[in-house]
Image 1 (tube, rainbow, N blue to C red):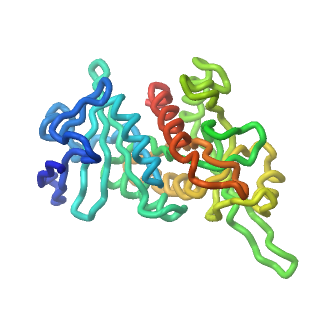
Image 2 (image 1 turned 30 degrees about the vertical axis):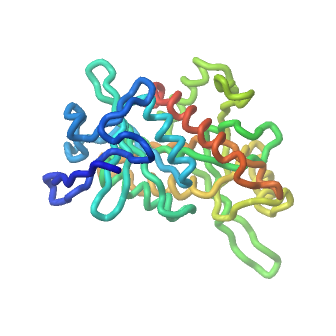
Length: 303
């Protein structure tokens, strides 16, 4: 059972904080080289309400993605779960590096889709004001060079849903979201220190690469889908498709200038299927784990 305690933030918001249960000892259990502890037990970790922007906020969509991220980042830093009175759940990860405490927070969307991704960004912005927001999880490959288990770092997202419906058919009006220069420099730095594509250690030949990703509401499971044809014509180098990236990028863009919240975003997507009729859930776990591992490997370059 979880050992939850009610904590007043000092700003009128009462929060319920505690340790992730998930079948583990909630008092203080070891996870590799890191320890999971409650906020009271980790007094050296600054609380959310210290008005400091967190280094990164991570959005996941599926439970398998959330679990993989928690397991991976718990080996990197101290893990605390925080639940607000509104039922929002955040997973905080902190690690002391020299004289600095690096802080990463993650939350799962309520539902799949662009709108829920945007709402998750708003929740992170309001509660933690992260300087970077990352979407970490799975996607479907639409390019022959990308295989199951590979990971794509998105340097550009093409939103393929906007369109005009006419008697002659739909005329698509794609919108592009490009990562900031700082994120692009971080990706460049990562591949400067690693081969490109990067062979993931102990991952049965899986690789990490950078490229473009298509984003829309439709889950694609047909090689002849009009969306796939459109994306190929838009840019033949688009590697994969997913259903939340455009919403996340738009939400980050809309929040710029309001607070110290995120001005940069990133997508790290593990390939779980080929967006065809064979699409199923059998590779969700390995794709989620690989995406989480690549995100953790990117952190030194991003922060």
